[in-house]
Every structure is written in structure tokens, then in C-alpha cells.
Length: 585
Image 1 (cartoon, rainbow, N blue to C red):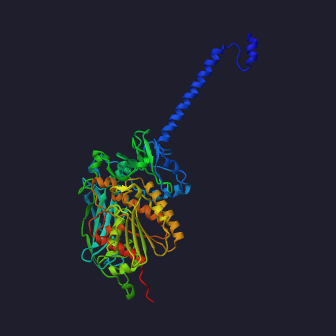
Image 2 (cartoon, one colour):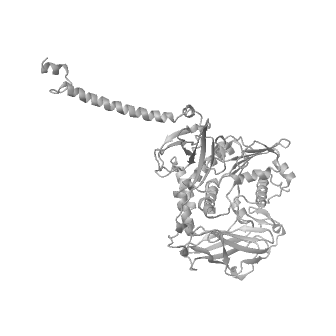
């Protein structure tokens, strides 16, 4: 066959190119396509190996159903390269609220010190009670002001703010106490303000919890090292078991390491564990506290967190720290008998102690309850308690009056239930979902509060009590905002379908601090969460129990679990809301 005939038989091929060269090019193209297909198929096979039958079927379950894990490799977009702590992008409204909440807790940042000597020293610092206007005697209804001047370890006045101070006015003789508020003048001086609420002796105590320089370190750790408090889970199948690290903020030092994704389908709350090497993700058995990472601060920064040196040290007065308060001059005897006396105070606390009992500042008398009246108050009621161990304290207090139904749950974890069939009383407690630093919790008992609230019918005989704060302090504030937003939405749905439901929210309280506790669970973190919590639930039909002021105003030492006297006053405050006193005609 001539070349002309060959060209006519294959019009799509160029002239003058030998057949074997054209076949070689085609073979090379087919070879590349085959290799690409093999690589693609192998990657998908590996991915599918990490998906169990249950994992695949989970994708087609309703949003409120429980679900096993999804194994993932490497970071999931749009998370950054450092941690998995920023998850779904907020909506424009959520972003606007986030910005407002974060602006409300902005804290002054000090210049970086060159040595410990330049930082705030509570021993060198002093406060003075300012004289009253016109030099007149102090009476109930007035306001007391004390001026604090912070100094460094060389006794030189500080010229910038940011120190974390707390203040209290109390009278051991009267069993009285009230929390003060501290105003930062941003120049090294502070004002502590107290309303004068009782007649008789009163003493001022001002404490430096952390220096401004220490607070700056805490801010850095919160934003940059949310993984410093870590968790673990045990995975087991037959005789084979593995333990891996878990968190909502997992660092990606090894970006190709696969993850088990336990993100809640209903709320979107994220949670991850490093995938076991030889077990699937749905073999997770439990969840438990792993511990704290060490070496988070430099040697110079560690000097800012010394017990009895610059952690919770009392500032002394330059003169008298006690005053005598005279009774209010009043003509109306009815006002004299009220538990709260109105006055021109600039600072209004939530309440105060008098003769050991808490009195609300809103004018509602707090009733005192004995065993009989507690049973009467709770008759026909269902009390649902959710949160950390500070909420478990409430259940333990009420358990003394309502027989516990033994669910054989772990003593510190729960869930717990108490039932009085005769009086139709039901008490329930369940811990919140991760992050949760309890001892071992069964994976099946890890529940998110928002999901639990969505299962309640609600109504006038339903009480919901919440306390979520202690386990969130190591994490960025955005994590807490997201969790509270889900709970707020669930409460809005609950109140809509069950009008008359009483919702009680317990705020954070002060706790004992040392270096390690300060770096991970400082009172400064708790103070910030309290401000966020109040702002987020403002306008919603909820009752706040101000545990911060109730522990600050009390004469007992700070403890994550307040003593029985404080718990009794908290329960009395709640029961007063459940069973308000009948108004006299």
C-alpha cells in the first residue's frame, strides 16, 4: 500500500509519522491514566476501611439520633494549621454577637516587664478607705469607697492597670458580707466600691488574685494553647485495646495522622480523638481526663505564679480597714423592716449575707427551708440538673430529703436520680458533654445539654438547673460562646413548648489557686465566662444564682466546691423561686 493510500485510510493521523511511534505515544497515555486510576482507587479503599457499616448508615439518620464516629485523616477545613478549635463559620448575626461579647470582656494589656521586680507586688501595695462626703458619719444605704495604689516589688507605684483584684466587705460578728466591685483607673490605681447594707462593724478586704503581667500570660495561653488540658479515650475490641488523646482542639504536628470525628450531629459541637492504629473509631469505650501539659511558661513567667507571693495575696490598708455603720435615718417604719433598704448606691450586688443567710438585693425575701418545707415545695415537681460537679453538689444536698434511686453510676460522674413516689418528686442529674475533666465516663453517657433539653416537655412543674463553666476555662472564649448559644436556643424552644418552666443558671465561683491551677483554671478565666454567660442569657426568662458573689462575700476559704453553708443558701434561693411566699392581702 502506498503512502497516499495509508493517509486516505487514516485521515486523522499526520503524514509521515511511523505507526510504531504513534502506538508508543498512545501506550504511554493509557499507562498514565491507568496509574492515576489505581492511585485514586487505593486512596478511596483506605478511606473506606476507616468507615464501618454503622458509620455509613449514620449519615442517613435523623439529626437528633446518637451516632458513632467518622474517621478522618489530617486537618478538616476550614480549620487552621495549628489547632482544630475554629469550626463552622458563624452566621453574620452570630459573628456580630461574638464580637460584642468579646469586646465586653476586653482586659487591659500591660507592657512586657523585664524582671519580676517591675511587676505588681501585693505586699508593697496599699489601700485606704476614703472619707465620706463632707466628713459625715456613714449610714446604711451609703456607699463606701477604698482607693488602691499598686506598687512593684521595689515599692515603686505602678502606672498602668490590668491587675485582677477582688474586694469584700464583711462583719464576722454579724455573719454579714457583701462582694465589692473594683474599678480600674488604668494608671495603677483602683477603686473598690461597697454598698453599706447593715448596721454595725464592717471590715474591708482587698486581694490581688493575679498581677496584670500574670493576666497577660493567661490570655496568651487561652488563645494559643487550648490543648494544654487534654483528655483520653480507651478503645477496645475483644482482647485488643488502645488509648489515644482526645480534644476539641487537637494540634497537627503530624498532619497525616487520622482522626476519629465525634462531632455531635444535632448541635455541631466538635470532639476528636486520634484514631487507634489497629481499631476502628466505633470501638470507643470511655472518656477520661488525661492531664495538664507542662512547661507552658518560661522561667521568668513562672515567677508571676507563686503562692503566697503573687497569687491571691491580701493587700494591706495604709490606715484603718474597719468602719462602724450607723442605722439609716428613716421616718417610715415599714421601710425599716424590709430585708433590703433602697439607697443611692452606684453599685448593686446580687445580694449579701446577714446573720449567715443570703438576702437578695432585688427585694425578694429568701425563704428558709427545713426538711418538711423542702418536701412540700418539691411535691409534684421534676427537677432536672445538668452540668459539672458544682451542679452535682445541688443534687447531693437535695438527695438528703428525697430518696435516691440507685442507678449504679460512678460516684463522681452519674447520672443520678432521686424519687419520692408518695409526693411525686423526681430529681435528676447528668453531667455535660465534653470537654469534661471527670474520671472515667462511659462513652454512651456523654450527652450534650442542648440535646437533653430538647427531650423535656417542660411546664409549670418542671425546673431546669444548669452549671457549665469549670471545664471550659482552658479553652478560647469562642468555644464557650458556641456551647452557650446551643443551650440558649434549646431553652428558647423549651420555654416556647412548656410555658412556666423555671430555668435556673448557676454562675462560676472562686476557687483555691496554685501555679498549675492558675494556668489552667484561674478565677480570671471564670470571671470572663461569667460575663459572657450573663450577657448571652440577658432577656431570657432565667434566674441567675450568683455563685461568684456568694463565695466572695462569704467568710470561708475559696473552693471549687463551696462549703455546705453556701450550698444551703443557694438551695434556699432556688426553692424561693420554685415556691414563692404567698403575698399577704
